[in-house]
Length: 247
Image: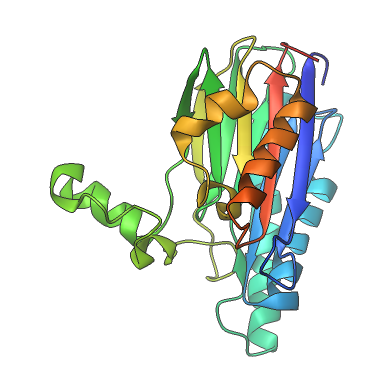
C-alpha cells in the first residue's frame, strides 16, 4: 500500500524450542496480522499457520475495503472450523491460535479496522503517546473490566496467572467470537501488531521511544534488542507500520 512502511520480526526467543507464531503482511491490500498458536510445539504452529494461510488465500487483491473486511471474517471462520475439526479428529485439547489484525482502507486513508481474539495486541503510537487498541480476551482482563480497575487492580497484569488464561481463541470452539473495532488513522501514526511474547516484556510506556523518530527497520531493531535483553522467554512476533511518515 502506497505510503505505508513495514518491518517485521518473528522468532522463537531464547527459551522456547519452537516458534508457534505466524505473521501475515498483505501490503498491497493493507492487511497485517499476527497469530500466536496454542497447543504445544507443532500443534500450536499448525494452528497459527492455518490461520495465516486462510487470510492469504481468502483476501482478494481485487476487493474493495468493505468487501475485504467480510473476507477477513470469512477467513477467520474457515480457519476456526479447520482447526477445531483437526483437533477433534486427533483428540487434541486446547489447540488454537490468537489473532491481532489491522486492516487499512487504501482509498480513505483516515480509517481502518482491527479484528482480534485472544491476547495478541495492536498498539497505536501517535505524537509520543502509545494506546492499546485491543482488549485481551483473558480471565484476568475480563475480571478487571467487570469489577472495575479500582477493585480488581492487578487481575489484568501479565504477572497474574489469570491474565494468561484465554476466554476466546480461534479453533477452540465450534464458532468463533471475533472482536472488531473501527479506528481512525493519521499520517505519522505508528502501529505495532504483536504477540504476547512482545507485550509481556515491553511496557506500553516504552513504545514511543522505541518505535518513533527512526525508520521502521531501525525501530524493529530497537524493539527486538529490548525483548532479547529481557530474556525473550516466549516466541515474539511483531509488525511495525508507519503511516506515511519516515522511510
